[in-house]
Length: 292
Image (cartoon, helix red, strand yellow):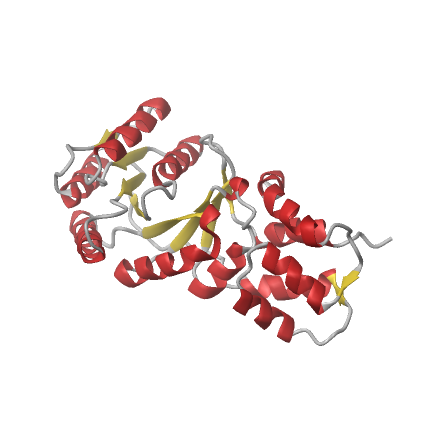
C-alpha cells in the first residue's frame, strides 16, 4: 500500500526538489514555506502550520505533528445499514468518476462481495456507454437506461434489483454537470430521496470524486457539492499524475471530510485506501535526511 502512495507522490516530490534539492535534518520556517507552497499546500494553511511552530530549527517530527493535525478529519466510520450498501458517486465531468466506480466495484468483487452498478448519469450518453464497458469488462451487472431518461428511476431500479437478488453493494453514478448548478442540485437531491424510498436510509454513503490535478482549486467545487447534498467522504483521483499532492492537506483541512481512497493509476486495482501517516511520511522522506 505504502509503495503505491509513495510512487504516486513522485511528481510532487520532484516539485519539492526544485526548491529543496538537498535533504537536511532541520529547516527554517522560510525554507519550509517554500517547500509546502511548491507542493501546492494552500498559502493560508501554510501560514497556520508555521505560526504554530516556535522553534527556529524545525525537525521532521515537529513538522510531522503539524501536518498530521491538518488531516484530523480523514478517518471514516462506516454507518450501520441493512444490505445492500448503497453508494452515490458525485463529482464534475472529467474528475474520473467512471473509472473510480470501476475501481470500487473491482475492490468489492475481490473481497467476495456481490456488486451492482447503476448508470445514473443519464445526461451524457458517453457516461452510460463507458460505465457499461467497465461493467462488462469486470463481469459486474449494471442497470441502465437511455440518455435523457430519469436518473432517479435508474437509481431506484438498481437498488430494487440488488435487493431482489441479494447483492451486498450498489454503486450509483450521477451526472457531473447539467445546464445550471440549480438543475444539478435538484437532480442530486431527488436521487437521494428516491434512494431512500427504494431502501431505507440509502444512500448510505455519498462520495465526492476530486481530480487531484486541480489542486486547491477543487476546494470550492467540493464545498458546492457538500452544500447541495452533503458529502460523506472524498476520493482523490490522478494523484500519480500531479505535482499538487500537498493540496490534500488543504482539501482535508478546509472540508473536514474523510478522504477514503486515492487513485494511483489507471488500472482497476489502482485504488489505495488513504492513510494519513503513510501520506505524510511519504512527503517527509523527500525533505528530511535520516538521522544517523
